[in-house]
Image 1 (cartoon, rainbow, N blue to C red):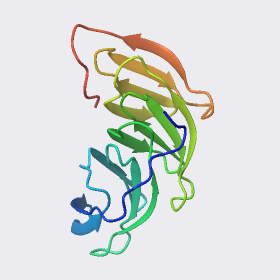
Image 2: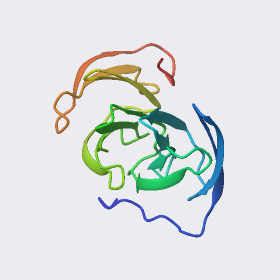
Image 3: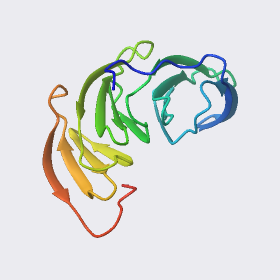
Image 4: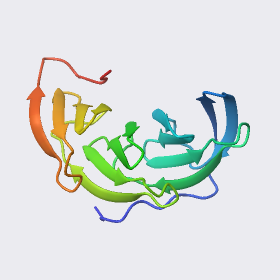
Length: 165
């Protein structure tokens, strides 16, 4: 598999409904991937779009959201969290991806932490990511050093952990 991100198909469109603090927004985005998760910080919506990766939308003008940045991750972007400077993506078989989103027009990859399972959901608390990793359980990952995330602890049960709250 190539280290290069997949190229987007510019002619595939899908309708995305974004529910924000100020109301409902409808707009077209590409490619045709479901919105698996979204989080909003400072009028910017960060969308996890499966195989299409991360998309950042400026929602500062009600009724006129605009896609301003994107990054096609290697895996399947299932969940996203941000502190405004960095983005954290549960990226399926590729585990946890750490992104620099300080310039939302040009998000860039910082590092990744390969997990043993399938990263499905996450929650960010200060410098710790709580990651639902499917059959591998709950992983607790320290992300204080964005270049070198590391496993602090894990908890496994005989179940497929899909969500954290």
